[in-house]
Amino acid sequence: MKKYLFPVLAVFLFLSFSLKASIVDTVEIYSPAMKMKLKAVVIRPDNYESLKELPVTYLLHGYSDNHSGWIKKAPGFEKAADLYNMIIVCPDGGYSSWYWDSPVDEKSKYETYVSKELVNYIDSKYKTIKDRKGRAITGLSMGGHGALYLAFKHQDIFGAAGSMSGGVDIRPFPNNWDMAKRLGTYAEQPERWEKNTVINMLYQLTPNTLSLIIDCGTDDFFFKVNENLHEQLLMRNIPHDYITRPGGHSWPYWTNSVKYQLLFMNNYFISKK
Image 1 (cartoon, rainbow, N blue to C red):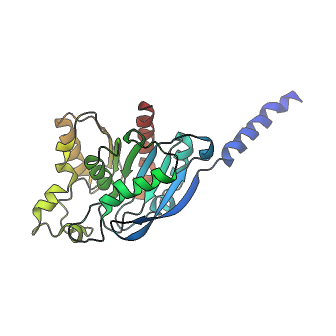
Image 2: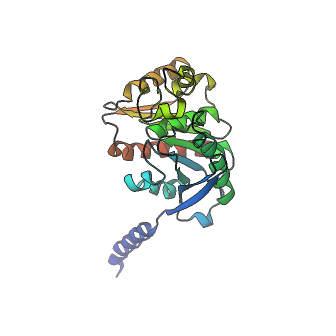
């Protein structure tokens, strides 16, 4: 009889692990700044009810996508909520907001929405660590720009930030991805473009105050601007993790990349306990 004990125990443990599943909800949040409701995906650990205050990682989508992009196109990443006991929030950042408060379009105030209204909502509805040491933000492409942009400007809100294939310098792309609709054209409003591109915002950073991870594939059209950002951070002695590997601007790359990002965020949260 004893010889069957290990196989039975192994099967039991396997089934128990398999039955664990992150809790994935879609919520609707009203934005006073934009006077409209927006959806967000909120991912909680399976054992959420038995846990105390949890850290939160905000995960931003790219151009032309929405709140459901990550959960639909990178299946499996949500397991990190169970693995690390964190909440993951995927907000709707608009089709082409670039996460700015647009000086052109009064209905595009996504800096205010994500950094204030959304954070306040999540903190009021969930068991969260209501401090920068329990908040991180990252994203892909437009969302990679957005995560760094918001974290640089709101270091009192976010303690860690990341970017995957981020558009970290918008100036080489004056006619792309509806950015001119949010800032005005580069030719007519150059000061807005200079002010609102991530690579020109490094003066706001003090070494070791914001934990940073930047990741971009070597075949990506944003690779050069990410290399430039890395060099500028090195020149300013700003500590950061910088990852490059073969790959382009694609979901297979981001599905792999997000694992490193969430591990980095978890390590940051642990370091602040």
